[in-house]
Length: 168
Image (tube, rainbow, N blue to C red; front, side):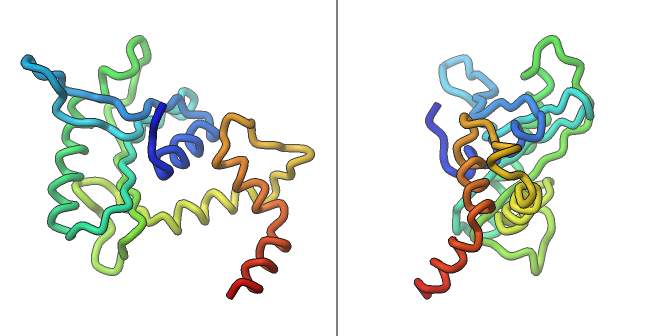
C-alpha cells in the first residue's frame, strides 16, 4: 500500500507495540462518489483497549490552516472510527494525536482538538525502546522495515555517530 514515510513509521511503531493498525482509511462515503475524509492511522490495542487516531504531517502551513484541517480530520475520526473494527468492542474514548515535523510546541500542546507531538519526541520514544533490543537476540520483524532500520542505527550507533561527526 502506498503511504508516506511518517505514516509508515508511525504505523510500524504501533504495530510493533501490539496494536491492530488501519491506514489511509476513507470514511464518509458520499452518495455521488468520493469520501468526506481520509484517516491516516487508526490503531487499537486489544489488551489495553487503547484506541488511537494519528494524523502525521510534514506541512509548513500556518497554525490557522493546520487547526482547520486537523479539526476536520479529528471530528471525522470521532464520527467514523467506531465502525472501523467490526466485531470488536471498542472503547468510547479515542486518543487523537497530530504528529508534526515543522513545528514548535512553544505556544501550544494541542491541534484541532488532539494532542500535539513533534517528530523529535516520537523518535526519542522509539530509540529509547530500541536502545537495548539487540539484533542477535531481539530483531525487529523484517516486515517492519523502517523500525528495523532504526534498530540497525541503534545497534551500530557508535559508527553512525562517528560518521556524522566526520560529515559536519
